[in-house]
Length: 187
Image 1 (spheres, rainbow, N blue to C red):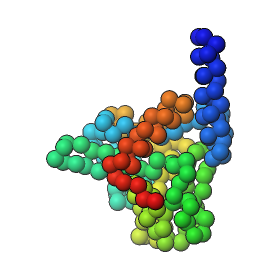
Image 2: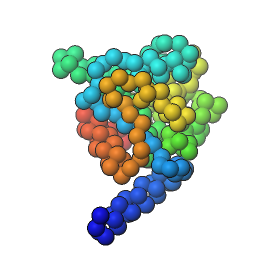
Image 3: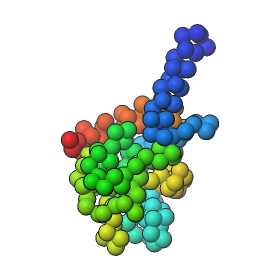
């Protein structure tokens, strides 16, 4: 490895560490991020089922924090979930401060504070927050406390929990930008 490559690698590692520490994510080894590769999705909906089971103890995709959107004409399925934004709109609009960063890197909803007003749902550029009518609270991906079950059960590798390297962070950012282009961004 040349001196230049070594410097760039150290710089990238420092940038990743700084970006993650901004949200309270402490590096123990290396922090991880949830990655979605829509082109790999086979539409099995296992992610919806495991998510709903983890959240509510029943298999009901309506209660999942991940939704698989199926485009039958194009034979495409795309899992949609919280992208754990760096600068989350949902957090900015919450009138009671119920949305916060956790050390896992997740942007989470504090159920004790949530009043179910749905402001966060309106603010999410991808609509990846759902209203749980039973609890009258908002629900979103919380990375299962740092061990996202959807990534472990996904048979095609569409959803992965990967090291937060600069390469993976850049890939995640590109995927998020593509989602914004396709679905539009709410300002």
